[in-house]
Picture 1 (cartoon, rainbow, N blue to C red):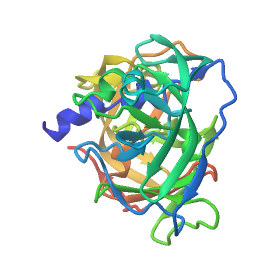
Picture 2 (cartoon, helix red, strand yellow):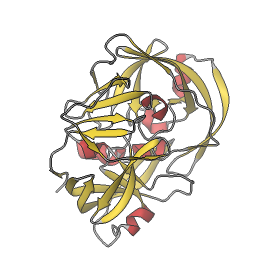
Picture 3 (cartoon, rainbow, N blue to C red):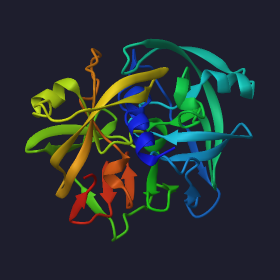
Length: 315
């Protein structure tokens, strides 16, 4: 599979099962207990799917290996229904929850409690929603039947080395960002983080979403307001969303800034508007941090990135 094909197909992965699927009718969702074996770190772990820009890692769930997507846009952790059956989990409970994806379909979910090992770290008692993840959980997508969301990330610091395709988690207590990483100004958007992005001079507030691959993905309404539907060429594609696949378009913008970083000839994905309250208007994905290291402290809040002065991401 060519890398560009993968980026187009996975460009809005978080649009369906990450930043843009929201759990309505919120429930009390207790965070997991975090235990490090030593040193306050999982150690560096390779991406489970190195072809994809979105971070995945092999974890042990109740003693069995599972591929997990690390998704800073997902409000809660999620396990695919088929994996629940494969693992033979019986501690299933009902929760008053509705999940919406870009395609507009809703799923009423149940929940389960998981014990997870990631490198030199344990997550005990992680509550995960049980949903049908569709192609995301198959080998035609990411093969990720588990999503670790904000309920996990707010308890830890996430570091990614996108050049080497590796990941590690660290204890938040006593952590300070390395001197090689500079802060990017972020604010809270619910439990997620967002940054002010300028697209050819128009300002857009976008959720920082490790589950998305495109530099920037926006709703059609946001694209119209930013002047991106001005007759420029649009490239059709498909994106994985909650429970299926939907169409999307990609346009090239001359300039895009995140903080004081300048991106030239950047590809911006456009997905259809979704009539769900609180649905993000824009997502910043992993292509914005290509070949660099970054640290995400969701509980801080803070985003720290190794960055050059000017970046060209297309042409």
